[in-house]
Length: 164
Image 1 (cartoon, rainbow, N blue to C red):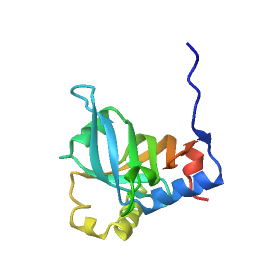
Image 2: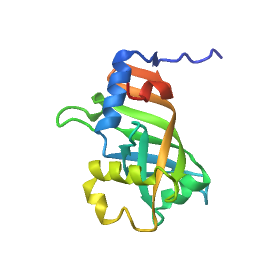
Image 3: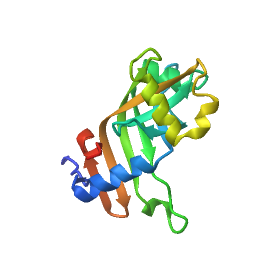
Image 4: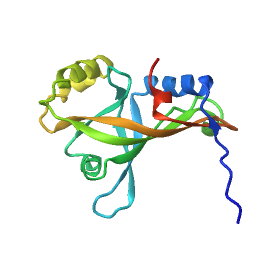
């Protein structure tokens, strides 16, 4: 049986710009994790943003099942991109990023800067950001697929997602 050919294009400047824009505008994302109890996939809607260096970040409560899933199985994926007001949602751009989660301890030197940066873009989080059960989680990109709309798809590397 012949090997299936890869229909995704290599990243170019257009794809990089679109992917970075989708990440920068996103304030929430779908997060895919592995359920530690069953080994099956699960999806959650999470608060989402970028850290001061422009890399994916979230803030999660210990009450959220995806927190334990990320702690035990840090390999995950996020999906960002909003459908437009008109037309088929599948014609609008979206970005799937495979990530590796890393929790940021409250004692880490960068925690204060992450908190300030997060509150600048997520002001309502002031109500709970300091609760002891909340933690920042860096979502380090491993690879990505950008679907730019009908017939436009690219494979991206972590460096393609970094701001210039």
